[in-house]
Length: 386
Image (cartoon, rainbow, N blue to C red; front, side, top):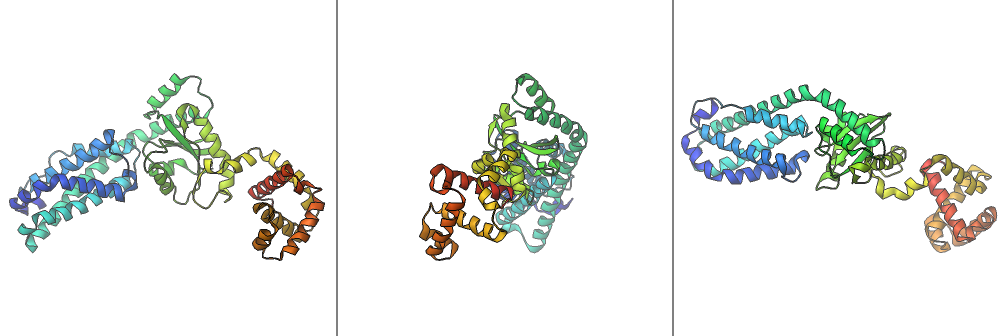
C-alpha cells in the first residue's frame, strides 16, 4: 500500500493539525464547489464535517502500515446520500479533488521537518491514492443509488409537481402523501422556475439542493425549496448557465400554482429577450410588464386602439413619431430634455409635438391620455410591434 512507506513520525506530526485541516477543507469546498455553498445543517452538515474528519483520521492511522483500507461502506453511504440530496456526480468528485489538494498542502506544512525529497514523493502518492479510493467508493454508492431510485422517484416527483401546479390545494393530506412517496420534504416556502420547453431533468442536478423538475402540459418547470436562502439565487443563476428561466415569487407550498403562473407568464417575454439579458429573470422585478401583457389579445387591442394615429403614417414617419413620443414621455414633457435625448434642436421637437398633438386629438395634453399612450408604447415594445 502506498502509505506503508511513509514514516510513522509523519503521522505523529500531522495528527494534532487534523481539526484545523477539516475546517480548511470545508471552507475550500464551499468556496469552490457551488453545490456545497450552503449552511452546514442537518444530515448535510453532519456528513460533510464527520466524513472529512473520519477520512483524515483514518489516513493518518494507516501511515507506516502495509494494510488495505478498512470497510469503505461509509463512503458509499456518502455517495448515496449525495444522490438523494440532488447534488451532481461532478460536484461530488470536485469536492474530493478540492479536499485532496487542501489536505496535501496542510499536511506538508505540518510534517515538513520529516519530509526529505523521497519521503515527500511517497507521502504525495499516499494521500492522493487514498483520496482516490474514497472517491471511487462514493461514486460507486452514488451510481447504485441512482440506478435503483432515479426512475421510480422521478415518476413520483412528476406526479407531485403536477399536483402542486394544479391549483389551490383543497386536500393538503393528499399532497403530503405524494411528497412522502416522492421522497421530497415539503418546504415551508418555494418558488417555480419556468423553462419553456427545455429538459428540466438536464438542469435539476445543477440547482440548489432539493430542487425537483418536471414537464407539465408541455411546460417545463423547476420547483425550488427555500429560494431566498443563502446562496440559493446565485446557484440558480449559475446552474442555468445559458438556459433562460423565469423565477416566480416565493410562496407557501400550498400556493405553488401562483408562483408557476407568474413565472410562466414571463416566459414568452424573456425568451424574446425583453426581460433583460441575464439567463435568470426574476418575475417580481418585472411586474408592470407582466401586468401589461397578461392578456395578450387584450393588450394587442389596446395598442391598436391607442396608437391608431401612428398606423396612418408611413413607416419612416411612424418610427420618428414613436421615438419622439418615447423620449418626450420619458422626460415628463420637457422639450429641452427631449431634444437632448433625440440629438435635435428643441424647435424641431416642438414641431413634431404639434403634429402628434393633432394626430392624437388632445390625448397628449390629458394625464390619463398620456398614461395610456405610454402604456401602449411599452406594450408594443414588449410584443415586438414597434
